[in-house]
Image (cartoon, rainbow, N blue to C red; front, top):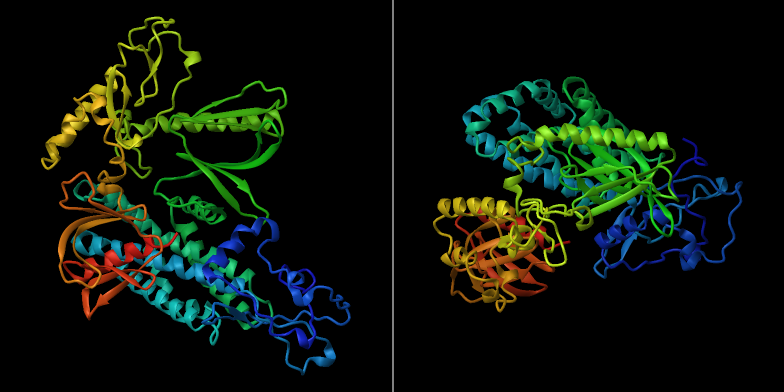
Length: 621
């Protein structure tokens, strides 16, 4: 690769009296986010001409400059500044002289390595859950014998990456860590070789496993992580100098992980689809929890969004159960706008004057009008979407599977907002078929979205997606919701009696209870962590036993697990967690800056570690 055609940054030559320029950084993490957010304009590269020391300086001639690169090394100082040594171009006559060094922003290679470390830490947590599940069942331990070795390997890689980034200024580069584990990567070949057969055995015994769906997802993440290595190392390689030793090491590390990726493509039944999905997940910014067992790629392409002012490009990724609605960025990646479920989606070809080849997509309360380059392209999208929606119908009636679909439409009542029918399209009640008039008004059922008359839609029921606020529902939905509610009461005898009377009392009796909604007990299945802890305030030793629920970065405290109203709520953003208080591994503390807020004590050190990890994730955006 020549210096003239490379995409890397050519740092301009500067006089010696402009050296040691110091740039004030608020925080390396914040600076990384700013670089990513501005990628659409500057592609993340540092514009050296914007620095004060480079304004008004004449550009060196091509004969005087030479493409010399020096690998950047960030050095975070106590005063908040970050120093990075960057080599500058010099002439052939001055090659023996030391190059000038500037204190500028951390190198993009460092942040690529930081991204690899952060994702590795998350993967180790997933492997820990997988290891605990496999170890607890002798049948799984006999089949998935590679899981303990894989868990140990990733733990070691995470430790080495963490140490390397702490010593980045003295020892730059991460590729040698992967190269040192080259022989141990052969464990993945054994894991992949009989993956499909082992998965069939897991489906055979899944009726006896409490969390078979979660186990499948964790087993798939083992393979996905190797494919992610290739994506992350490629980004890391693109931010290195071709003249550096690390560039060559990274190329060799890419060969190691690529061999495993090719093995995935060859041995797995849906290996090619999995590679495609991993690439999509890496390319779409803001996409989380995307890779699911059974999800398959269908089609992608760019269409134009039709609006009153102008047309804007929108890139669509169609899967067999969802569609990603994104917009393209200048750096070649995509930013996620919305994740649209195919359940309940309707596709049409509306006649629009300014868009002859228009395609309209309606799902729930979202309506999108897109325009293709030609009617042929529009018809192609319409046919594929229609066929995918038809193929989705049999899946929606199955029990909970890899797509997260439930038993049927009745079980979803009240959990998600239904697509509301347009009142202009309905002239009679969808139950008793009475005609609507000035006195016989239309009423939406907030559970199924259909339109009924007043007599057929006179009941109210608290709906989950409306934060348990009571809303009008039709007679059929009310009956189904009552059945589900009674079954829940039968299964859980600890439910307070007041919640049962809420379905009987008129809504006017509850209007005065404003502000209680935010303190209602959250569903434990939707929370990150829940359980009983002992807590004391500040440095006092008056311990109190409470039941805690951590969800959406907020810590809820309840006197008892069966309580529906939280006695305290604490947003954890801006706090910090410290573990092993006074040498006790079962204790940890919650600080705000330097002020001690609470001291917690768990039943054992393992439970305390899980709480510490969950709270640490909740303290940052």
